[in-house]
Image (tube, rainbow, N blue to C red; front, side, top):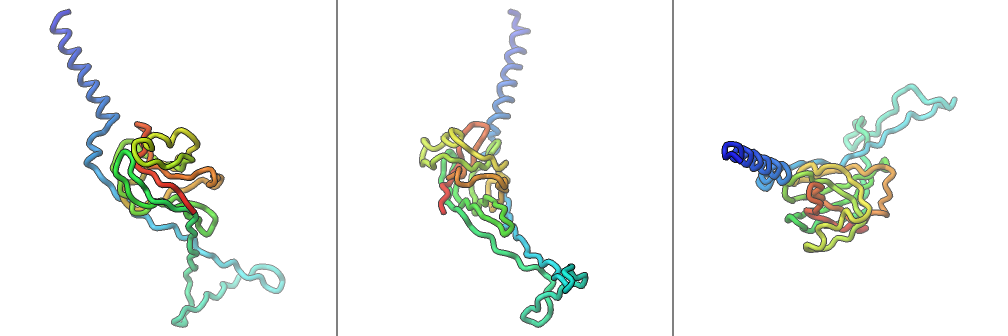
Length: 196
């Protein structure tokens, strides 16, 4: 073949390979970091209007409870959340630390909370509840998509305290672990065994 044709084709193919590699591996993310800090959601206790003697709710505003200073408080009281399960993160493909907690809020909704998270940034990182065992070392890197898992969404940041909503119908008895899962390469960055 003519060299004038071969060289541009090879250059084009080389650039295509580099572009695909950059898209898949996103090597710059080894040097990027982000932090998200979220509080545990508070569910406020609301007071229903008291019924009158006729059985109908009163249209008059209920008197707020007095505070220690003697002045009425108009603020509703927050109900404390309840921790159901917890576990410490171990490192898999990337060094990972922090704590995973499943918390039930006062209204019965549940969240997975990652506290003190510190892991690497990476492409297509997800937060999964799974039924897989948490195994240290390379043997534990790829087990989380072998059985049942529940994808709670994209990892919000590689550092900080994050909340992930657990769907109301999810059966927590079916899941025993949490993985920060790289869906692009089917590998766990870090995982935690959940215990009561």
